[in-house]
Length: 169
Length: 155
Image 1 (tube, rainbow over the protein chains, first blue to last red):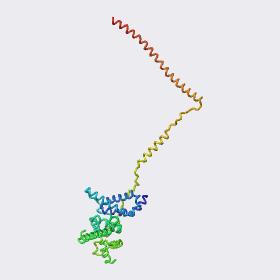
Image 2: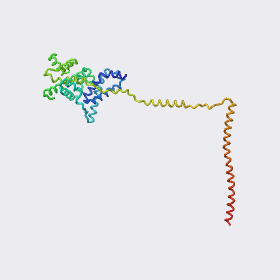
Image 3: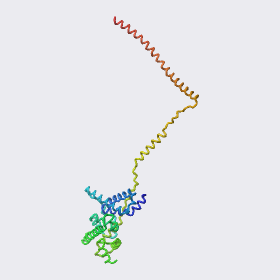
Image 4: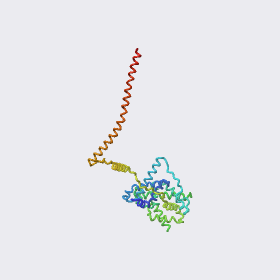
């Protein structure tokens, strides 16, 4: 497999890998490193790539596992992943819709969710995968995904309602 | 879009029962400038989802075709060099055999003659050694002197 062929396979979902990594690791730099790592792993195993039924789903699972490992190792070192990207790339969009920082709230609320729900929200509401795919990526069954998704969505809505009603911004 | 419809969808949405298409509708609805006031709090959520979709991975992927240097090839090269070395280094065993006996005789006698002349040159210098012998013979007289002196001192 040439580089070009590989890139053709990888390009469509590299952003998704990155966003999932960022969802879990928070820091942009860490997420970039994780994405690189995942893609390099794919590249090094490029001979096997044809055997995978769904490279994209496989990569997402890989990303998930990689990020978990990373988080675990950071915890073991008693270090928190430090990130300095409190303001991320969607500021221009925020301005567009003039929502001030209430959009940021959503990201904070999602950050507080359990890892599992975080990923499911990411995969469903942002990346728009269907349930079967998510179930495969996260190695869960379909209903568990739905239940977790529903919980996550309710939590987000409750917290948002709270901030909305209190006018806390 | 009918508000009722949206409310229904939202409920289904929270139960995780919406299809991707219905979620698209929701996202579309909440990306509008104005939404129903009592649904205002959903707006940042869907805006966030849509905004987050745009985020891209900009770092490039260092796709090196990883060539692990194979030390096996050094061995192969070394062996090749050695073989070539031996091949080109083979001194011809031919020392110039002369087929014609007469010519061979001439050559040999020439060589021997050369040896003998050089040999003679060497022996001629040895001739000086005779002078040395002569010298030592004269030293014999010294013994005579010694004899006489011993006689004198004895008395």
